Image (cartoon, rainbow, N blue to C red; front, side, top):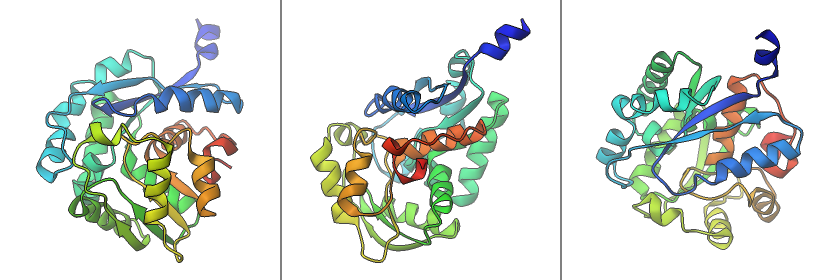
Length: 247
């Protein structure tokens, strides 16, 4: 039994809202595996209710009952930590509310927990980027809440650009050209990193191209979510294919 336990590959479980860019996670697991990491990244979909980047809908999407409803399902994957893989439905609660959301998730799961919003805050600090730019898919009023969250984490946001996209389903249809255009449009000469805060956005395959295009670190939602999950396991992986954050 002890030998079997020692041989088990460690895992981070992700609670992911709905269906849009969830295929980034097996892609990220594969990229990390090619870099020598031995970790599983199982994902379980939560019921999102209304698919809308609107404050009331996001508060319901990230409610304790919706997350708790899927905890046992993700724990069945023999995970060692769990992450709420959603940016907007975590930062929408504010700095204190997002902490409470994670505390409740950890208590229900009986495991270390975090969320994508805290992943962004931690990734910015890990890169020692004092000034950042936000290139968001969201409407500007929602993107402003992410700006406030980052400021509470100690970051200086030198520019913020929203795109006015209401649904995650639409964001999930974007390809490399749209993602590159989003990043270019949201960059700022004073920014030391550019943040793309939406787990509905496919980015796992595009990070080297994004950083080459902008000439600076680019942090994307699914990338930082997995980085944070590895951190909960005290796993450090050098993986240039996932950008400056992983080197």
